[in-house]
Image (cartoon, rainbow, N blue to C red; front, side, top):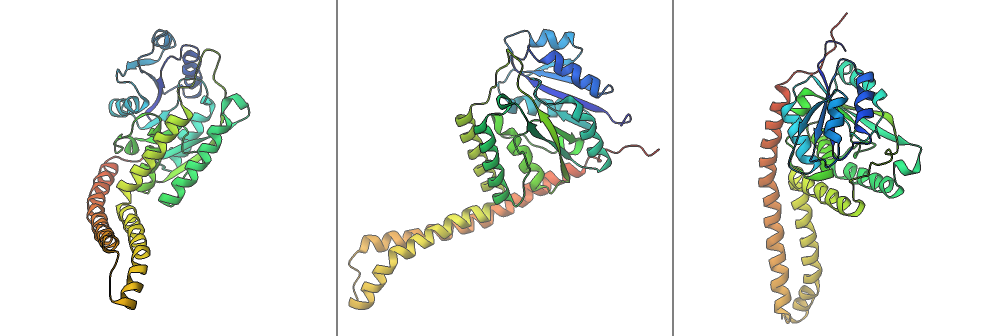
Length: 311
């Protein structure tokens, strides 16, 4: 792995209690790697401590993890990227195996699936939410990962440079997962330990607010990436509802030759028209989606896979 340019990128916000030990851990695990700390408007001593620890410190003024990831993926040039949080929750000792797996198997992403022992490391509500969202993603996109919300990942250069960051906040991991699934990228997983935050470090994740935003992101990505199924499903629901409304009208018409509930007949007819329009909108948008996917695929193929030099 010595011939690969490896970048370890740590998004940080008020992590003075953990950033020095996190940088030291990754430096010990990957001595040849460049350690980047991307500060996101910390109000404590995170920047000064990161400098003292020997990290390359850069700043992103726009608040939010999405802005940090967008900036670091655009600015950093490497063959292999390791992304982890700067709060000491992820185990740096797993990084060499993630890099080895990515390079030797020519993968584009390796996800560090979290395994925790301490209850304070990973709250029960977060565990349940992770399982539910992971199952939802698998149902909508056909396959998924064991831990779609893990922030510990290794990427190839071609993944990073073909990934258009569009989401906001903590739903960035969901968008990363969908990007890999939609381009049929070779990916892998490795179990890593997940620890509790050190004293003085607080989680920025809001269970309900960010959970809703993640659910909304999954729905948006499904609408964008699967327009035929999304709009076709909407059209099918409208057709079913229109048929239910129309059955009594048809029976009354066959029996009496009259349509006594004319507004209901208009409503059912309008629902059928909207259903047909929805179906054709899905077909048109599917053509647009295919074009966008081809462009992302071409951007992906413009970069070589990370390779370990043969000995």
